[in-house]
Amino acid sequence: MDTAAALRVTGVSLDSRAICPGDLYIALPGAKTHGAQFAASAVASGAAAILTDDAGTRLLAGGSNVPVLTVDDARAATGVVAATVYGTAAISNTLPLFAVTGTNGKTTTTYFLNSLLQALGNTTGLIGTIEILAGDVAIPSKLTTPESTDIHALLAVMAERGIAAASMEVSSHALAFGRVDSVRFNVAGFTNLTQDHLDLHGGMEAYFETKAALFTPQHASAAVICVDDSWGLRMAAASNVPTVTLSTTDASITPTNAANHWEVRTVRRDGIGSRFSLHGPAGEVLRAGTALPGDFNVSNAALALLMVTTQLLAEAAQPGDGAVPHAASQEVLARLQHALDSHDPFSVEVPGRMQLIGTAPVAVVDFAHNPDALQRALQAVRPATAGARVIAVFGATGERDATKRPIMGAVVAQYADVVIITDDDPHDEDPAAIRADVLAGAVAANERGALGRIIEEFDQRANAIDRAVELATAVDVILVAGRGHEVYQEVKGVNLSLDDRVELRAALTARGFPITAPTTIESSTDD
Ligand SMILES: CC(=O)N[C@H]1[C@@H](OP(=O)(O)OP(=O)(O)OC[C@H]2O[C@@H](n3ccc(=O)[nH]c3=O)[C@H](O)[C@@H]2O)O[C@H](CO)[C@@H](O)[C@@H]1O[C@H](C)C(=O)N[C@@H](C)C(=O)N[C@H](CCC(=O)O)C(=O)O
Ligand SMILES: Nc1ncnc2c1ncn2[C@@H]1O[C@H](COP(=O)(O)OP(=O)(O)OP(=O)(O)O)[C@@H](O)[C@H]1O
Image (cartoon, rainbow, N blue to C red):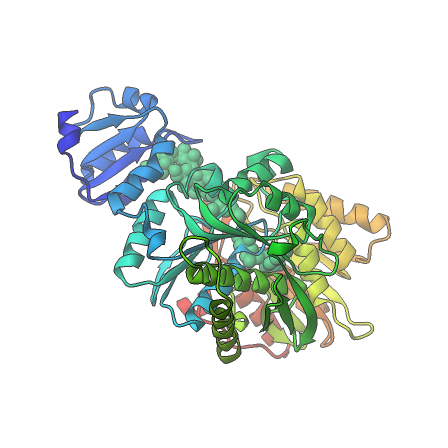
């Protein structure tokens, strides 16, 4: 214990491969192996000490020449240790943090938050599926929500670099594995809950409970919860931090506490996007727009707007009773409206999210990879022109929630005229068996009279995309769904280069159809 008391570490990592000299290596039990198996390698890389559990200590059994600290639950200790080492336990007092959780819309909403915070004059940070940004420094992202050791290190770097506000996606995996432990967000937002990740959670109730952990004083000072569905209403009731609710569709359920309820009204189409107004309980009105198609992007934009509004109102609140004087509230609204009008922050492009690749036919790459997202994406791209068809290319992921596969097949058959089934990331599963599960759902829906009369299957995703373009006329719409921004397809442990945007653009060009210019975060421009 004397050695431990005198010990100084300069960083923390859960991964022996990422250890830098002077780091603490936290050896965790995992699904496949125990981190203690890699302790020697961590020490060889310069680990100054090891923290682990009883099982880890037994595995080390006198074989370590650095101090070993043993705790009952090493994962539960990780967040607090990382926050202590990086000095980030109370960082949200000086660096406002925004978290977004929900099945769909996390990435888009964090991009919208980031864009609005910048429009308000902040240097910002962003942590999510596509990339991590600390001001103008971009760091590649491996997970939607990094491990807590990485989050605390990133927050320390952000504070050092003068970042004024940061937005983060919080996945249900992150909540289940304690990745946001010792992080308290100023405002946590909830988008929606629909079927996904049942391989991890077992059922929707457990999935809901995991998400609900974000809306507790341990993790959030305030919540903004979208109540467009009954899960949202339940989340608002379960939340035990000050909560503002948001409804974004006519069909939304009105919560009982109208005093904290905001709603979207007057949505109207504007090109492929929309304009809308957001109305508060005291007659507040903010007007905004988004160039991204789909009603769900109005929801995402409204959620981002209300989360920032909530934080600015909290900053304007009087110490003591917490009330916001009328003049201060008017000032906040005016500042926000000016940022909305001058920067159009929700028209930022989100890589692989309803990303327009071709114009005639309209050809879109989107990340929809679960039943609800697919339905909404297909509805969003449905053309008004009589006789125009929607041609969908998609597949399901291996080693993830297998129950959603036939449902995805059925949804696409229901909402697309032409259904082209192919591979997503099969991981270690047999791709043909995954396609068969999806196909079964599409065929069954077809037999029940679903819209999709043409159903085809391709084992090569590039060929499936090419086939979609071959079948298309200039008035049709092609939706290539499921992989969005991803540039590799993982097949039996091997990452094969594959970018839907590149394949779609090539197929359109080969047939003389017009395309849009590539954007920055694409494999075609990275190379
Ligand atoms: C299912 C899941 O989340 N698994 C996580 C879990 O892995 P595991 O239990 O299999 O770990 P393991 O391989 O047995 O290894 C045990 C320990 O040894 C360590 N190790 C292992 C090998 C080595 O050489 N050195 C080393 O130190 C590992 O870092 C780990 O701490 O613990 C690891 C670190 O402790 C995580 O990196 C890993 O996430 C993997 C990479 C993953 O793919 N997770 C996905 C499913 C995920 O979290 N996705 C969500 C988003 C989902 C969505 O919304 O779509 C996300 O937030 O990204
Ligand atoms: N609010 C929403 N409701 C339903 N579907 C949405 C919503 N926002 C986006 N989508 C659909 O879900 C897909 C994924 O969106 P996004 O990446 O923003 O969500 P996410 O929660 O980060 O997803 P993931 O956890 O899988 O990374 C989009 O490509 C779109 O098809």
